[in-house]
Image (cartoon, rainbow, N blue to C red; front, side, top):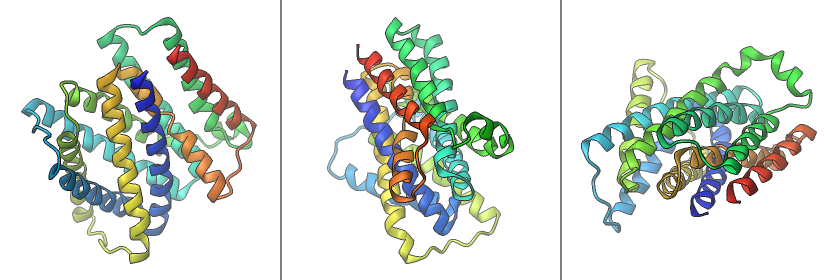
Length: 280
């Protein structure tokens, strides 16, 4: 039960983080918004370490955390770019669908099949992510714009491998130092990209508040996912965390007036059914 609660908290935090991240990307660009959000996040983590007795992980865990951070950051940059140039309420759910499938597959092979009701819950959760991704014209509209889904799908692969590698890094305990190494891997990747492309590093001061909120919320999503994986199974933690588009879509509906259609409401109901089945 604790794993399920933590997974849902991760989804809420990540969903709100992706909403604020999409807004930040529209202001300063996807790559700069991710860089400064990561920077704010790692500074916050170092501040936490002043008050926490969190042991430094071993070499194996550090390598997995670095890889997780790099792949997760690639996914994040691709997702934010997709949301900045496209429809926020479609880009986030499509990436989440693939992000959920990868760790479920790995979890079945490494931890065995979950309980019967839990496995059915996975199915409802995946349907929920897909239905939430539907625009007003439903599946027909998405299939007619398959080229626009390349970035969200690639982002989903990055997120899926983040789930797998971060779970491996933290399976023996710990969280804060693992997130530091994960952030370091992600920041190294972004800095390299910005240097190679000779991008402008400057951002408007007016964008810093939304970037800061995004950085803290993304950090919260990572933290709750790690705890969910430690309290239970990789696949359960990943599937529940992948419900983050629900929060993104609802926030986009409230603040950006992107209306939820019937398919998306069906997705919300499927998500609730999935949660009930996993807690049974």
